[in-house]
Image 1: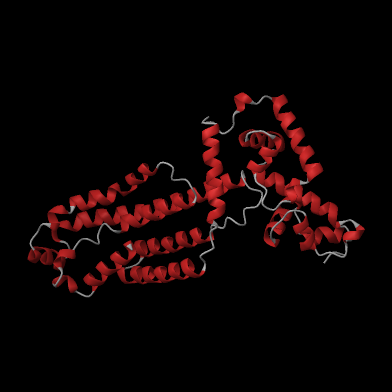
Image 2 (image 1 turned 90 degrees about the vertical axis):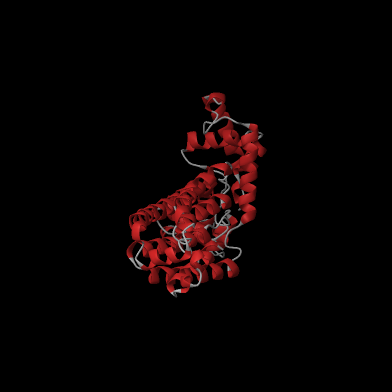
Length: 334
């Protein structure tokens, strides 16, 4: 909606329609300052990081300040407004230049903040889930990339190129927003947010782990129970396995389990479970009775839910592809 308003105001000025609508003059000047905060707020909302919503209001303060500073222009007579625009800004030239500089800073700042928030979210998700493929954030990356292109055009090109890129961005967003409606799995995110909320209620400790409550003996005891569960019940074969479920099976708090895995394995939950799956695949792949199966079928049997996830994790831990590993094992798997 904001982009549509911005494009409309640009169109009025570009076509000279401001002669007939001088009341719209200068309304478009501060609008670039709202796009970055809106995108950032949207991403925080999708990733469940907007618990302190009142703080988001602060990101829109520069926009309000600029409009207040332009209030003396808005109350000018229509003829005076048109005169100022025809003369390139008149006394407002330096003011416009300062706003342009602020717009450039805003673009770089909010693209960076958005990427950092996604990085933080992916790190937190890795500590909760054994498979993250269902939580697909490509849609958000597409939005950030599109906005980044627009900011690049604002900084290095003219108005025409900038607003052509905005129009293309709108078409791009409409296409992926409609045809790729499932690109972001909101169910997974809601489940993750519920877990985070429960952890906050149960344990309001601000530190990452409750280290004061877990000594080395307790950590070792939890780890022994975890290994036993993994060996006997092969929990890792569940593609949707998550930290909360494993912690409930062990009758401990998720934070305690997370600390145990991190302390002994030096891994997060995602890496720990996927390493277990890789070892299971290696075990299954060399059994004579399994030579009739494909690589992918055994990968699924080991707990992976996609070929991409399997190949990525296998190369990460084995420093070779599954096919190269099987070739060295003289396996006939296809």
